[in-house]
Image (tube, rainbow, N blue to C red; front, top):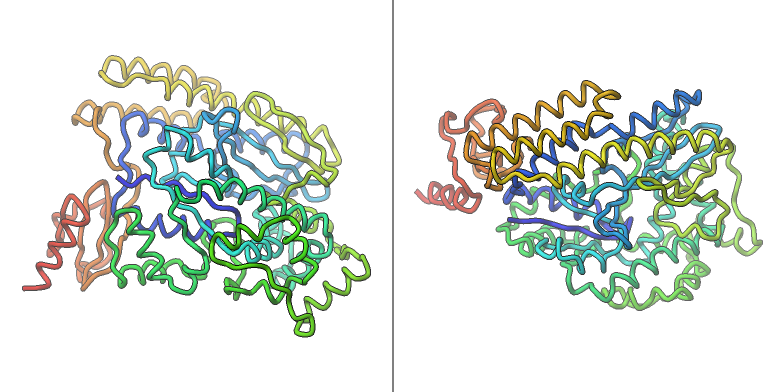
Length: 525
């Protein structure tokens, strides 16, 4: 069974690598034991238990329409995530929140690390060495995204975070939502060398952690995926132990190439970019000197990108000329009439902020306000209190599910009773979500012992049908551990509502490889 784990710094092709693996996973879908199925149901039904508490705290503080809270951060595992270095049994997930006219903050919420496995692909921007050292991740197939550090840093300066994306979608004139807006926001980042150095330090720290363990990962270079997508996807599949021939790889790239892959974050992908070597049109030699001084050249050379060479200043683009002029005069570009837009765009996960004067707070048991620019500290405290309480309630329930014993029906029902008892505070606050969760976990338990599935790992019954590929007049679909080739002539079908065995001309097998061989045999007749 394929159990993928993906690490990679932001802007390194991380989302693309995850998306390629997501396209491959239906060929060998994860199998979940009974405990994992129960934890998945808890997380699925109580996805918004903490974010609802946060929103209610803002409402109580008089903040409603001006709250900026992107949907990507509202779910339990939504946001950049990592393992606590001093307690890797806990996962940390960062949430970005802002209020128009008042400031923004980053809220970090910790949960049992098992929450990370409720995503089909365990993924993180951080601590590549730690993932290789923990026994609980020893059996995972490890992948890492890589890109020329110069391209990563350049992309980071133009990137728009999900907080800013939400603000743009709601409060910026659509006619102004274009690449000129990106370039304008990037001018501060290119001309404030403290900010630029903070970006470089973040990546230097990442590569220092990654280089000693790089050989424990299958590395996908972003440039290879862009220039030779089918070949690169084939290599990823081979490392995963999956048979993907070039025509199949081409279909995967057609679904993924040059599109936004991050849901509610509409600005993660920069239209018209994703060009290998594009950094040469935006950075200046001053930036290259800072990168060199911070010692990033060894990482560049280790992954086949060569050393840092000076740019021809006579060939600078108008943007580079403008930046170079500002740097020569020691001017930081800060002409931003919309200060909210500027402030939200500043807040980044791939930035060492130690040189900046944010308000910072320590850890409580479950949460931390990592940094804040709010002018009203009382709002921060009330939101933090609400998040701490809600996270504690959820974690109590998750820890009960994790500690449960499910070997016998008697033990399993006793453990279920403990889970539901631990969920009583959530039941009072979110009765409908609690009821849906209680019904689902009860149904999972009853089905497991009724159908002999209590001691078996099975494909996630909650996962929808997934298209693997088209092939010679068939759509090949994965659903609940079975693989079906459905003739295109059958028209639109929902396999969650219809048994594929009843479809005329369909071919159904228990594994993808056996199904594919059966189709090849049919084709040879």
